View 1 (cartoon, rainbow, N blue to C red):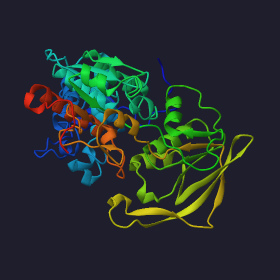
View 2 (view 1 turned 120 degrees about the vertical axis):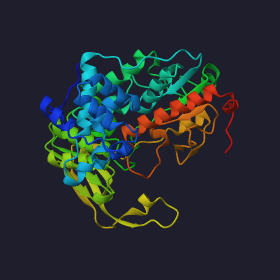
View 3 (view 1 turned 90 degrees about the vertical axis):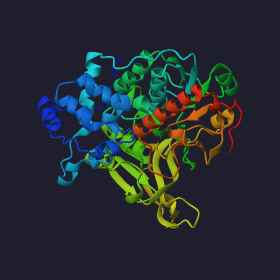
View 4 (view 1 turned 90 degrees about the horizontal axis):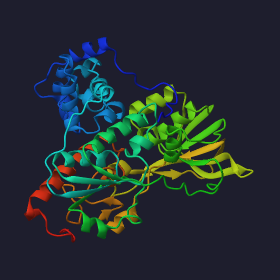
Length: 453
Protein backbone atom coordinates (compact mmCIF):
# COMPACT_ATOMS: atom_id res chain seq x y z
CA UNK A 1 0.00 0.00 0.00
CA UNK A 2 1.23 3.49 -0.85
CA UNK A 3 0.84 5.99 1.98
CA UNK A 4 0.76 9.79 1.57
CA UNK A 5 3.95 11.75 2.21
CA UNK A 6 2.39 15.22 2.78
CA UNK A 7 5.10 16.92 0.79
CA UNK A 8 8.85 16.59 0.60
CA UNK A 9 10.64 14.58 3.32
CA UNK A 10 12.56 16.66 5.85
CA UNK A 11 15.85 14.86 5.23
CA UNK A 12 16.85 13.70 1.78
CA UNK A 13 19.28 10.78 1.37
CA UNK A 14 22.94 11.49 0.71
CA UNK A 15 24.28 11.35 -2.81
CA UNK A 16 27.01 8.84 -3.67
CA UNK A 17 29.61 11.61 -3.59
CA UNK A 18 28.40 12.84 -0.19
CA UNK A 19 28.54 9.30 1.18
CA UNK A 20 32.17 8.87 0.09
CA UNK A 21 33.18 12.25 1.48
CA UNK A 22 31.47 11.72 4.83
CA UNK A 23 32.58 8.10 5.28
CA UNK A 24 36.21 8.97 4.66
CA UNK A 25 36.18 11.80 7.21
CA UNK A 26 35.85 9.37 10.13
CA UNK A 27 38.96 9.37 12.36
CA UNK A 28 38.15 6.02 14.02
CA UNK A 29 38.64 7.63 17.44
CA UNK A 30 40.11 5.30 20.06
CA UNK A 31 37.61 6.39 22.74
CA UNK A 32 34.64 6.41 20.30
CA UNK A 33 32.66 9.32 21.79
CA UNK A 34 29.96 8.80 19.16
CA UNK A 35 29.48 5.17 20.17
CA UNK A 36 29.32 6.09 23.84
CA UNK A 37 26.72 8.78 23.12
CA UNK A 38 24.41 6.34 21.34
CA UNK A 39 21.92 4.70 23.74
CA UNK A 40 22.25 1.44 21.77
CA UNK A 41 26.07 1.81 21.51
CA UNK A 42 26.31 1.20 17.78
CA UNK A 43 29.97 0.79 16.74
CA UNK A 44 29.87 3.92 14.59
CA UNK A 45 33.47 3.81 13.40
CA UNK A 46 33.04 0.19 12.30
CA UNK A 47 29.88 0.74 10.27
CA UNK A 48 31.27 3.89 8.66
CA UNK A 49 34.53 2.11 7.83
CA UNK A 50 32.58 -0.65 6.09
CA UNK A 51 30.67 1.91 4.05
CA UNK A 52 33.98 3.46 2.98
CA UNK A 53 35.14 0.07 1.66
CA UNK A 54 31.83 -0.71 -0.05
CA UNK A 55 30.76 -3.42 2.42
CA UNK A 56 27.18 -2.21 2.87
CA UNK A 57 25.82 -5.52 4.15
CA UNK A 58 28.54 -5.63 6.80
CA UNK A 59 27.82 -2.01 7.71
CA UNK A 60 24.10 -2.66 8.09
CA UNK A 61 24.81 -5.73 10.21
CA UNK A 62 26.89 -3.67 12.65
CA UNK A 63 24.07 -1.13 12.95
CA UNK A 64 21.20 -3.58 13.25
CA UNK A 65 23.05 -5.91 15.60
CA UNK A 66 23.06 -3.06 18.14
CA UNK A 67 19.77 -1.43 17.18
CA UNK A 68 16.87 -3.35 15.67
CA UNK A 69 15.21 0.01 14.95
CA UNK A 70 18.17 1.32 12.99
CA UNK A 71 16.09 2.33 9.95
CA UNK A 72 13.71 4.45 12.02
CA UNK A 73 16.41 5.89 14.23
CA UNK A 74 18.40 7.02 11.20
CA UNK A 75 15.46 9.29 10.41
CA UNK A 76 14.04 10.41 13.76
CA UNK A 77 16.90 10.31 16.28
CA UNK A 78 18.11 13.68 17.63
CA UNK A 79 21.59 12.87 16.32
CA UNK A 80 22.81 16.40 17.01
CA UNK A 81 22.29 15.64 20.71
CA UNK A 82 23.63 12.07 20.56
CA UNK A 83 26.26 10.61 18.20
CA UNK A 84 26.84 13.69 16.05
CA UNK A 85 26.80 15.90 19.12
CA UNK A 86 29.71 13.85 20.50
CA UNK A 87 31.68 13.79 17.24
CA UNK A 88 35.16 15.36 17.55
CA UNK A 89 34.36 17.48 14.49
CA UNK A 90 31.48 19.08 16.41
CA UNK A 91 33.81 21.77 17.78
CA UNK A 92 34.28 22.95 14.18
CA UNK A 93 30.49 22.75 13.69
CA UNK A 94 30.92 20.06 11.05
CA UNK A 95 30.21 16.67 12.68
CA UNK A 96 30.15 13.62 10.45
CA UNK A 97 26.61 13.01 9.20
CA UNK A 98 26.33 9.75 11.10
CA UNK A 99 22.55 9.49 10.92
CA UNK A 100 22.52 9.95 7.15
CA UNK A 101 25.28 7.34 6.71
CA UNK A 102 23.31 4.93 8.88
CA UNK A 103 20.28 5.51 6.70
CA UNK A 104 22.34 4.92 3.56
CA UNK A 105 23.52 1.50 4.72
CA UNK A 106 20.09 0.31 5.84
CA UNK A 107 18.32 1.74 2.80
CA UNK A 108 20.62 -0.47 0.73
CA UNK A 109 19.41 -3.49 2.70
CA UNK A 110 15.78 -2.42 2.22
CA UNK A 111 16.16 -1.76 -1.50
CA UNK A 112 17.95 -5.05 -2.15
CA UNK A 113 15.82 -7.22 0.17
CA UNK A 114 18.89 -8.49 2.00
CA UNK A 115 18.42 -10.68 5.08
CA UNK A 116 20.88 -9.93 7.86
CA UNK A 117 19.94 -12.28 10.71
CA UNK A 118 18.56 -15.78 11.20
CA UNK A 119 16.76 -17.25 14.23
CA UNK A 120 18.78 -19.24 16.77
CA UNK A 121 18.29 -22.95 17.49
CA UNK A 122 14.96 -23.58 19.20
CA UNK A 123 15.11 -23.36 22.99
CA UNK A 124 11.63 -24.79 23.50
CA UNK A 125 10.66 -21.63 25.40
CA UNK A 126 7.84 -19.27 24.39
CA UNK A 127 7.69 -15.56 25.26
CA UNK A 128 4.69 -13.24 24.99
CA UNK A 129 5.32 -9.61 24.05
CA UNK A 130 2.52 -7.13 24.67
CA UNK A 131 2.99 -4.30 22.21
CA UNK A 132 4.55 -4.24 18.75
CA UNK A 133 6.20 -0.83 18.90
CA UNK A 134 9.97 -0.18 18.93
CA UNK A 135 10.59 -1.73 22.37
CA UNK A 136 8.48 -4.81 21.67
CA UNK A 137 9.96 -5.37 18.22
CA UNK A 138 13.50 -4.94 19.52
CA UNK A 139 12.86 -7.50 22.27
CA UNK A 140 11.17 -9.90 19.84
CA UNK A 141 14.01 -9.66 17.31
CA UNK A 142 16.69 -10.56 19.84
CA UNK A 143 14.61 -13.26 21.52
CA UNK A 144 14.25 -14.98 18.14
CA UNK A 145 18.02 -14.73 17.66
CA UNK A 146 18.36 -16.45 21.05
CA UNK A 147 16.08 -19.22 19.75
CA UNK A 148 12.98 -18.52 21.83
CA UNK A 149 9.54 -18.65 20.26
CA UNK A 150 7.82 -15.26 20.37
CA UNK A 151 4.23 -14.10 20.05
CA UNK A 152 3.58 -10.36 19.73
CA UNK A 153 0.17 -9.07 20.79
CA UNK A 154 -0.69 -5.62 19.45
CA UNK A 155 -3.88 -3.54 19.62
CA UNK A 156 -3.43 -2.07 16.12
CA UNK A 157 -3.85 -3.51 12.63
CA UNK A 158 -0.14 -3.10 11.90
CA UNK A 159 3.00 -3.45 13.97
CA UNK A 160 5.35 -0.54 14.60
CA UNK A 161 3.51 1.44 17.27
CA UNK A 162 4.08 5.19 17.06
CA UNK A 163 6.67 4.64 14.31
CA UNK A 164 3.85 3.43 12.08
CA UNK A 165 1.00 5.55 13.39
CA UNK A 166 2.29 8.52 15.36
CA UNK A 167 5.21 10.17 13.52
CA UNK A 168 4.47 12.37 10.52
CA UNK A 169 5.27 10.74 7.15
CA UNK A 170 7.66 13.47 6.02
CA UNK A 171 9.84 12.50 8.98
CA UNK A 172 9.27 8.71 9.03
CA UNK A 173 7.18 6.94 6.39
CA UNK A 174 4.83 4.12 7.31
CA UNK A 175 6.61 1.93 4.75
CA UNK A 176 9.91 2.15 6.66
CA UNK A 177 8.26 1.37 10.00
CA UNK A 178 6.37 -1.59 8.55
CA UNK A 179 9.50 -2.91 6.80
CA UNK A 180 11.29 -2.82 10.13
CA UNK A 181 8.49 -4.81 11.76
CA UNK A 182 8.50 -7.33 8.93
CA UNK A 183 12.15 -8.13 9.59
CA UNK A 184 11.05 -9.47 12.99
CA UNK A 185 8.16 -11.39 11.47
CA UNK A 186 10.55 -12.96 8.94
CA UNK A 187 12.57 -14.31 11.86
CA UNK A 188 9.54 -16.37 12.83
CA UNK A 189 7.74 -14.18 15.35
CA UNK A 190 4.03 -14.91 15.65
CA UNK A 191 1.75 -11.87 15.54
CA UNK A 192 -1.74 -11.33 16.95
CA UNK A 193 -3.15 -7.92 15.99
CA UNK A 194 -6.22 -6.07 17.28
CA UNK A 195 -5.59 -7.72 20.66
CA UNK A 196 -6.18 -5.79 23.90
CA UNK A 197 -4.79 -6.85 27.26
CA UNK A 198 -7.55 -7.07 29.83
CA UNK A 199 -10.21 -7.58 27.18
CA UNK A 200 -8.85 -10.20 24.78
CA UNK A 201 -5.86 -11.35 26.82
CA UNK A 202 -5.65 -12.00 30.56
CA UNK A 203 -2.63 -12.25 32.79
CA UNK A 204 -3.72 -15.72 33.84
CA UNK A 205 -3.65 -16.95 30.25
CA UNK A 206 -0.29 -15.32 29.58
CA UNK A 207 1.33 -16.87 32.62
CA UNK A 208 -0.22 -20.23 31.79
CA UNK A 209 0.68 -20.32 28.10
CA UNK A 210 4.08 -18.56 28.08
CA UNK A 211 7.36 -18.97 29.92
CA UNK A 212 7.90 -15.20 30.21
CA UNK A 213 6.13 -11.96 29.32
CA UNK A 214 7.53 -8.64 28.07
CA UNK A 215 5.28 -5.64 28.61
CA UNK A 216 5.98 -3.10 25.85
CA UNK A 217 2.57 -1.53 25.46
CA UNK A 218 3.69 2.09 25.60
CA UNK A 219 1.05 4.56 26.70
CA UNK A 220 -2.55 5.41 25.85
CA UNK A 221 -4.27 8.17 23.94
CA UNK A 222 -4.05 11.90 24.58
CA UNK A 223 -6.03 12.81 27.72
CA UNK A 224 -8.92 15.27 27.66
CA UNK A 225 -8.26 18.98 28.04
CA UNK A 226 -10.98 19.01 30.71
CA UNK A 227 -12.37 22.42 29.74
CA UNK A 228 -15.86 23.51 28.66
CA UNK A 229 -16.64 23.07 24.96
CA UNK A 230 -14.40 20.07 24.40
CA UNK A 231 -17.36 18.11 23.02
CA UNK A 232 -17.66 20.45 20.01
CA UNK A 233 -16.80 19.34 16.52
CA UNK A 234 -13.28 20.20 15.44
CA UNK A 235 -11.56 19.18 18.70
CA UNK A 236 -9.06 16.46 17.79
CA UNK A 237 -6.66 14.06 19.52
CA UNK A 238 -3.17 14.74 18.10
CA UNK A 239 -2.23 11.08 17.78
CA UNK A 240 -5.49 10.24 16.02
CA UNK A 241 -5.04 13.24 13.72
CA UNK A 242 -1.48 12.26 12.77
CA UNK A 243 -2.47 8.64 12.27
CA UNK A 244 -5.32 9.55 9.94
CA UNK A 245 -3.13 11.92 7.94
CA UNK A 246 -0.28 9.40 7.74
CA UNK A 247 -2.47 6.55 6.55
CA UNK A 248 -4.38 8.66 4.04
CA UNK A 249 -7.66 8.78 5.94
CA UNK A 250 -10.00 11.77 6.00
CA UNK A 251 -9.02 14.36 8.64
CA UNK A 252 -11.97 16.62 7.90
CA UNK A 253 -11.95 20.31 7.07
CA UNK A 254 -9.32 21.94 9.27
CA UNK A 255 -10.32 25.47 8.30
CA UNK A 256 -8.01 28.49 8.26
CA UNK A 257 -7.06 28.64 11.94
CA UNK A 258 -5.63 25.59 13.72
CA UNK A 259 -4.64 25.73 17.39
CA UNK A 260 -2.43 23.00 18.86
CA UNK A 261 -2.27 22.70 22.64
CA UNK A 262 1.05 21.29 23.89
CA UNK A 263 4.78 21.59 23.23
CA UNK A 264 6.21 18.11 22.78
CA UNK A 265 7.31 16.27 19.64
CA UNK A 266 3.75 15.09 18.97
CA UNK A 267 2.57 18.70 19.16
CA UNK A 268 5.24 19.73 16.64
CA UNK A 269 4.20 16.89 14.34
CA UNK A 270 0.54 17.95 14.58
CA UNK A 271 1.47 21.57 13.85
CA UNK A 272 3.58 20.82 10.79
CA UNK A 273 1.09 18.24 9.54
CA UNK A 274 -1.79 20.74 9.77
CA UNK A 275 0.29 23.33 7.95
CA UNK A 276 1.11 20.92 5.13
CA UNK A 277 -2.56 19.97 4.86
CA UNK A 278 -3.40 23.55 3.97
CA UNK A 279 -4.29 25.41 7.16
CA UNK A 280 -3.30 29.08 6.76
CA UNK A 281 -2.65 29.94 10.39
CA UNK A 282 -1.26 27.21 12.66
CA UNK A 283 -0.36 28.20 16.21
CA UNK A 284 1.03 26.33 19.19
CA UNK A 285 -0.14 27.34 22.66
CA UNK A 286 1.79 26.25 25.74
CA UNK A 287 1.23 26.99 29.42
CA UNK A 288 4.97 27.11 30.14
CA UNK A 289 7.82 28.90 28.35
CA UNK A 290 10.12 28.13 25.43
CA UNK A 291 12.80 26.79 27.79
CA UNK A 292 10.37 24.20 29.18
CA UNK A 293 9.37 22.71 25.81
CA UNK A 294 9.94 18.95 25.64
CA UNK A 295 10.18 18.86 21.84
CA UNK A 296 13.60 18.29 20.31
CA UNK A 297 15.37 21.49 19.32
CA UNK A 298 15.62 20.44 15.67
CA UNK A 299 11.86 19.75 15.59
CA UNK A 300 11.18 23.21 17.01
CA UNK A 301 13.52 24.80 14.45
CA UNK A 302 11.84 22.89 11.64
CA UNK A 303 8.37 24.03 12.75
CA UNK A 304 9.50 27.65 12.73
CA UNK A 305 10.81 27.21 9.17
CA UNK A 306 7.40 25.78 8.22
CA UNK A 307 5.76 29.03 9.31
CA UNK A 308 4.29 27.87 12.63
CA UNK A 309 3.47 30.51 15.27
CA UNK A 310 4.26 29.94 18.96
CA UNK A 311 2.46 31.42 21.96
CA UNK A 312 3.90 30.71 25.39
CA UNK A 313 2.60 31.18 28.92
CA UNK A 314 -1.05 30.68 28.10
CA UNK A 315 -3.50 27.89 28.92
CA UNK A 316 -6.89 27.11 27.34
CA UNK A 317 -9.81 28.02 29.60
CA UNK A 318 -12.83 27.24 27.42
CA UNK A 319 -13.71 26.42 23.83
CA UNK A 320 -16.23 28.62 22.07
CA UNK A 321 -18.44 27.23 19.32
CA UNK A 322 -21.00 28.09 16.69
CA UNK A 323 -23.50 25.59 15.27
CA UNK A 324 -21.87 22.72 17.12
CA UNK A 325 -18.32 23.42 15.91
CA UNK A 326 -15.27 25.22 17.28
CA UNK A 327 -15.02 28.92 16.42
CA UNK A 328 -12.58 30.25 19.04
CA UNK A 329 -10.66 29.46 22.23
CA UNK A 330 -10.46 31.52 25.37
CA UNK A 331 -6.98 31.42 26.92
CA UNK A 332 -5.65 32.75 30.18
CA UNK A 333 -2.08 33.89 30.67
CA UNK A 334 0.20 32.00 33.04
CA UNK A 335 3.42 32.43 34.97
CA UNK A 336 5.81 29.93 36.53
CA UNK A 337 5.93 29.73 40.31
CA UNK A 338 7.95 27.57 42.69
CA UNK A 339 6.35 24.19 43.31
CA UNK A 340 7.96 23.58 46.69
CA UNK A 341 9.99 20.65 47.94
CA UNK A 342 9.73 16.98 47.01
CA UNK A 343 9.27 17.34 43.25
CA UNK A 344 11.41 16.46 40.25
CA UNK A 345 13.88 19.15 39.20
CA UNK A 346 12.12 19.50 35.85
CA UNK A 347 8.86 20.28 37.69
CA UNK A 348 10.25 22.68 40.31
CA UNK A 349 8.31 25.51 38.69
CA UNK A 350 4.68 25.03 37.75
CA UNK A 351 2.34 27.28 35.74
CA UNK A 352 -0.11 29.47 37.62
CA UNK A 353 -2.90 31.37 35.91
CA UNK A 354 -2.98 35.16 36.09
CA UNK A 355 -6.48 36.27 36.95
CA UNK A 356 -8.02 38.82 34.61
CA UNK A 357 -5.62 38.04 31.75
CA UNK A 358 -8.08 36.12 29.55
CA UNK A 359 -8.00 36.60 25.78
CA UNK A 360 -9.78 34.97 22.84
CA UNK A 361 -8.18 33.53 19.70
CA UNK A 362 -10.04 32.38 16.56
CA UNK A 363 -9.83 28.64 15.86
CA UNK A 364 -11.54 26.36 13.36
CA UNK A 365 -9.77 23.26 14.67
CA UNK A 366 -8.18 22.49 18.04
CA UNK A 367 -5.66 19.66 18.32
CA UNK A 368 -4.84 18.43 21.81
CA UNK A 369 -1.23 17.26 22.23
CA UNK A 370 -0.82 17.36 26.01
CA UNK A 371 0.92 14.01 26.40
CA UNK A 372 -0.41 10.47 26.70
CA UNK A 373 -2.36 8.80 29.44
CA UNK A 374 -0.93 5.85 31.37
CA UNK A 375 -2.47 2.41 30.89
CA UNK A 376 -3.43 2.05 34.53
CA UNK A 377 -6.16 -0.53 33.87
CA UNK A 378 -3.72 -2.69 31.90
CA UNK A 379 -1.13 -2.55 34.66
CA UNK A 380 -3.78 -3.35 37.27
CA UNK A 381 -4.94 -6.34 35.22
CA UNK A 382 -1.37 -7.58 35.05
CA UNK A 383 -0.99 -7.13 38.79
CA UNK A 384 2.32 -5.28 38.57
CA UNK A 385 3.57 -2.47 40.77
CA UNK A 386 3.58 1.07 39.40
CA UNK A 387 4.67 4.47 40.65
CA UNK A 388 2.52 7.36 39.49
CA UNK A 389 1.41 5.26 36.53
CA UNK A 390 4.94 4.21 35.54
CA UNK A 391 5.73 0.48 35.64
CA UNK A 392 8.30 -0.23 38.36
CA UNK A 393 11.23 -2.39 37.14
CA UNK A 394 14.60 -3.49 38.51
CA UNK A 395 17.93 -3.15 36.69
CA UNK A 396 17.12 -6.23 34.58
CA UNK A 397 13.78 -4.60 33.60
CA UNK A 398 11.83 -7.25 35.50
CA UNK A 399 8.60 -5.99 37.06
CA UNK A 400 7.25 -6.87 40.50
CA UNK A 401 5.98 -10.16 39.03
CA UNK A 402 8.53 -12.87 38.34
CA UNK A 403 8.84 -13.58 34.64
CA UNK A 404 7.12 -10.34 33.61
CA UNK A 405 9.50 -7.75 32.15
CA UNK A 406 8.82 -4.27 30.77
CA UNK A 407 10.41 -1.86 28.29
CA UNK A 408 9.61 1.30 26.38
CA UNK A 409 7.32 4.21 27.20
CA UNK A 410 5.49 2.32 29.94
CA UNK A 411 8.63 2.53 32.11
CA UNK A 412 9.69 6.03 31.06
CA UNK A 413 9.80 8.38 34.05
CA UNK A 414 7.20 11.12 34.19
CA UNK A 415 8.17 14.77 34.28
CA UNK A 416 11.31 14.45 32.16
CA UNK A 417 12.01 15.04 28.47
CA UNK A 418 10.26 12.89 25.90
CA UNK A 419 11.39 9.32 25.29
CA UNK A 420 13.38 8.52 22.15
CA UNK A 421 12.87 5.62 19.74
CA UNK A 422 16.52 4.66 20.23
CA UNK A 423 15.97 4.36 24.01
CA UNK A 424 13.00 2.06 23.45
CA UNK A 425 15.14 -0.07 21.14
CA UNK A 426 17.86 -0.33 23.78
CA UNK A 427 15.38 -1.24 26.50
CA UNK A 428 13.90 -3.95 24.28
CA UNK A 429 17.42 -5.31 23.78
CA UNK A 430 18.10 -5.30 27.52
CA UNK A 431 14.74 -6.95 28.23
CA UNK A 432 15.51 -9.70 25.70
CA UNK A 433 18.87 -10.43 27.35
CA UNK A 434 17.22 -10.49 30.78
CA UNK A 435 14.46 -12.81 29.60
CA UNK A 436 17.04 -15.10 28.01
CA UNK A 437 18.98 -15.25 31.29
CA UNK A 438 15.75 -15.85 33.21
CA UNK A 439 14.73 -18.74 30.93
CA UNK A 440 18.16 -20.36 31.04
CA UNK A 441 18.84 -20.08 34.77
CA UNK A 442 16.42 -22.01 37.01
CA UNK A 443 17.65 -20.08 40.05
CA UNK A 444 16.12 -16.89 38.60
CA UNK A 445 12.69 -18.43 38.21
CA UNK A 446 10.79 -18.30 41.47
CA UNK A 447 7.31 -18.94 40.13
CA UNK A 448 4.69 -16.55 38.85
CA UNK A 449 3.93 -14.70 42.06
CA UNK A 450 5.06 -11.29 43.23
CA UNK A 451 8.78 -10.57 43.32
CA UNK A 452 10.25 -9.18 46.52
CA UNK A 453 9.72 -5.44 46.97
